[in-house]
Image (cartoon, rainbow, N blue to C red; front, top):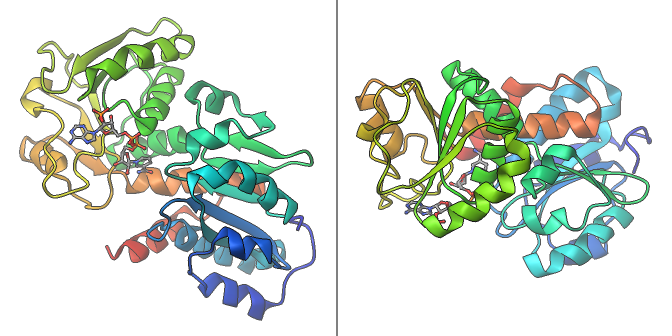
Length: 319
Ligand code: NAP
């Protein structure tokens, strides 16, 4: 239903807000919700904190703006092979906006009818907004990262040397953001070095003259400039047995280390950096700000309750 449509009864809204169950495409087939529906699609999706974050924000927004009383955010487990068929169905069922998480961000890129320029450079979307003819695709991860660096470390990408660890989807979004913000130079390191040359070639149109260097994570160069910003976009650190992705001794006097991982909240990389006296921050702020930007895109509100979203995410993560 259109956001300006009639509000659902409060009881209905509360029921949906408290409903954290994982829905499937079978539920979509019989879908009926008389409010404005948003959802995150992923596979798996059980552990996503996005429903908690967004429903907490919508409840707060509804207190001062009656339009949002009818809004609710759901979660759907959608296998990747079903996504191309599912997106038109979510549109037909009246969904106003969608978030996409692993493994859908690249698959959905090919399915949108309009695309935001930054998402086009990244080649992936994490946010869809309904249009009359289909879905408008955007990517808010880069914004989330830049805000996370600002809030967590007091650092700006503009003019800074950046050492980016990883060459997967998250690294690609981070690299585009670094280049668009005009970082001074970008070093990208990955475990599998074969992935680096194709990535750099795809980043050329975003680079606009900014130098991009590559390295193998286990053989970092010794000439990184002082005060570089280190961003971990590898998944090394998610499990207790994972190795630290880079030997921080190679980095000299880094200005800060930002780990996109937020669970666990202090990865061995962050612990190691802290022990060296380097300021650190984890990826919770990125998660919150990418969500805040998505919510702004859907609601048209420039200001959304970020502190409420963070508190809800922390609660959902048991932090
Ligand atoms: P992805 O596409 O699967 O890429 C994974 C990356 O991690 C690859 O570069 C991979 O290197 C590297 N890697 C995996 N295990 C490693 C190890 N043991 N040692 C060194 N490198 C290793 O995943 P993604 O979507 O980019 O996500 C990467 C991380 O960012 C995840 O931890 C994810 O949770 C996090 N993330 C956080 C946010 C947020 O909002 N905070 C948003 C997006 C992603 P190879 O190429 O060698 O396999």
